[in-house]
Image (cartoon, rainbow over all chains, first blue to last red; front, side, top):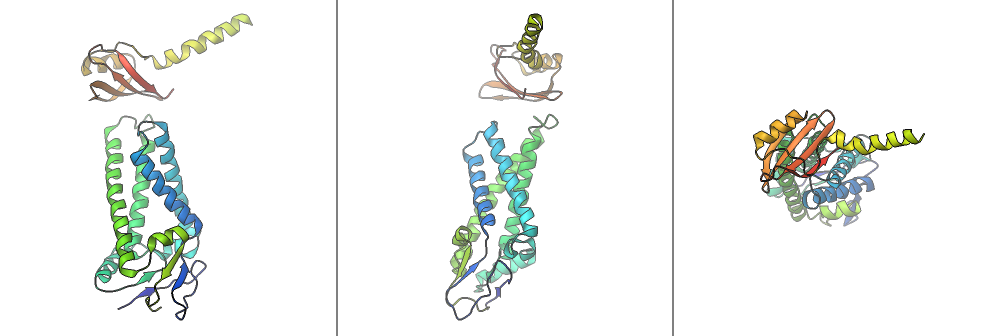
Length: 198
Length: 85
């Protein structure tokens, strides 16, 4: 009924079953800084800046740079931040969602399999937005309709993804009782007392 | 020396206008077809032409120059232009 994926390594302390509740470090400061900076940048470019003006471009470059930095971190950062801790696996994601609705309360010390897919989707979408955005500033693609349309379609997809991401975080938090928003703020997942046995 | 300075000043003063060839008030035409023809005549490659807020909006490129031009369709004049140089 319960499954727990405890990853040992630099980022995660070995869970002590006797101690409850347990605080486990999952997100290092850089992961958290990048997460909230990208979120803020997306909000600013979606709601504040004029897409035809320079600030929109500068914020876009910053978001792209942060995503690329996160990808580098995925290769060499602390264990929970690494790609190897959350490989893209659609089947596992489905199994995780199925389990969530059927009583499984697994806690993952990186992204859960569904969250992992969302993370890769968000990165790919942001990189696509950055790429099409930069293209529009070059003489070769300036004023070319399909580039603009791709940028806009990716934006619509990004907004849908962000909504799903937030819904997923809230759902997982409600069902597993592990506050994921807090974990992204202070870096720690606080496992409930009668939490999943490791 | 004085002449050289004068010549430099003259070049600097005229260069931007020459480079863009388009300034506020430049007459381009009152229809999309006329505007396209006028810009093409001036050496611009017209990428996109549409109407935005009652103005005709044009995206045009010449070499490395990119310009977004707004034309008042009643007067045929440029009312707003943003270029990258």
